Amino acid sequence: MKVLGIESSCDECAAAVVEDGWRVLSNVVATQIPFHAAYNGVVPEIASRMHTQWISRVVREALAKAALTPADIDGVAVTAHPGLLGSLLVGLSFAKAFAWARKLPFIAVDHMLAHLYAPRLSLESDATAQKTDAEIPSLPGYPFLGLLVSGGHSIVCKVDDFDRITVLGTTIDDAVGEAFDKVSKHYGFGYPGGAVIDKLAKTGDSGAFRFPLPNLYKGEHRYDLSYSGLKTAVINQLEQFRLKPAAGDSEAADIAASFQKTAVEILLRSLFRAVEDTGLNTIVAGGGVAANSYLRSRLAEREDLRCVFPSRELCGDNGAMIAGLGYQYLVRGETSPLSVTASARVKAFKRRYP
Image (cartoon, rainbow, N blue to C red; front, side):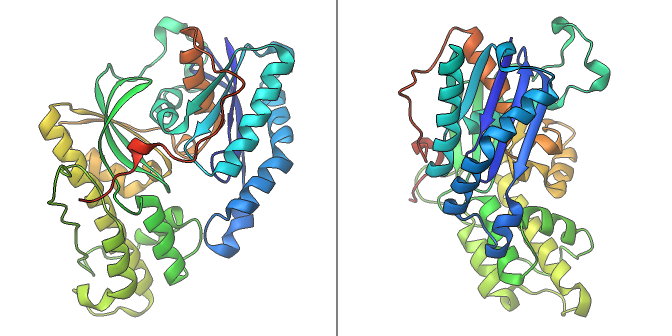
């Protein structure tokens, strides 16, 4: 089964064709970074406008790269939530029209669940392209722990199936990717903040500053996350947490390295608590921040854990993960009505404190 996947939840206009839920025939991502860089963040109105202008071309390119025509597509999957409402509606409307015109089965999916599916796609390579379905590398058996980290979400969850997760912990304020962007914007490091800080931190001293970790002690918040305090400390209270004198040209790199270390340690503290409490030692990561080199290296230090990451090109939003996840629903016989609409938020993915 060849599934066309469309993703437009934020500022990436993406489409892909995936066969049988794992074989990526094409994966086209049209990035809007140049249009948002001047604002050091995504402008929703610009994002939805660019999706409107690009979506048809991106889908045509995805079909062309897969050497297919619309008649060769067996099903359509699209992101319906969460994300920027205007952006979501563009992709959703196009996918509905494509499916209706071709009388194809159609499924609307959650793109955070798709991020958990992305590592399965990243396990494929040119060397395995000719393998049979029985030989396809797959994700570890359920259940496992999921770590979903992006600009809009920071989630630690227990994953029982491709469409069933239990959120153990989530952000009570800023998501980790959002904190990266805001710190980068304040210091003029560049955009997008996650990639810029990761690169800058490689030449910095992560011990130059000791930033505080959040103390979530009220109620059931053992696995929850918070980044507003760290963001405030780095931006407004920098000198209070300095351990080493300013080092001239290395100051920016030291700030980046110290901030990145603390941001990742906040994630790992909650994640390792979940490992301890659940007894699960397999972790599947997804989302843009899953590309962070420090996060990957810190998890690699835990030899008692099996950590599965997507390839870096599949960490960000992309159509391949949507198509792959959509395939699982479609082969189970599930479809969405054309009346389905977009939703900016998923209630379980955010939490209030206390």
